[in-house]
Image (cartoon, rainbow, N blue to C red):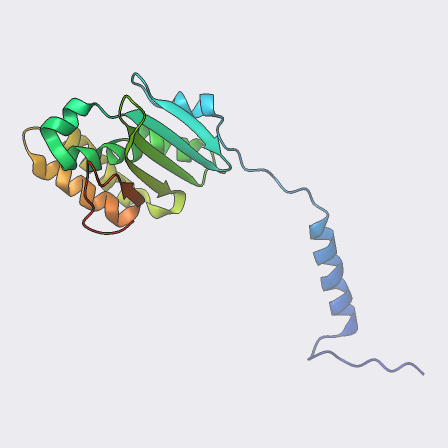
Length: 178
């Protein structure tokens, strides 16, 4: 006579069925989530000198930082430039169109290639409401930044709370880490 012991209240048949289901699930193909190519990513953004690269599931957008802006606007312009692009309609559209995209990094550089600032926005950082706030803050900073520098300061504060960032200390001393 064969003795069957129950494993913590489960019948042997339910354990066999559960194992079979789990084994069957392991045989199904895994769907690759799409990530844009560098050309597809750069097509989202307009402007001279903007370049895109893709590393894994993160897109890096490199944007020119005119030295004139740094000379006139100082560290506030240096810090705000990546946020003007990361909190933009093109970035949001790219996240919407490419499910596999985990993050968008924006790096601002001077004409000679020296990095000024960078910010990485992760896919899950913003929701519908916070995206609207980010887009509004960026649009107001673009429209009013020269006349009302506080709009740039507000954008920088918002960005520092929601991104991984780094500033070149030469152009933008950091008030907090990142």
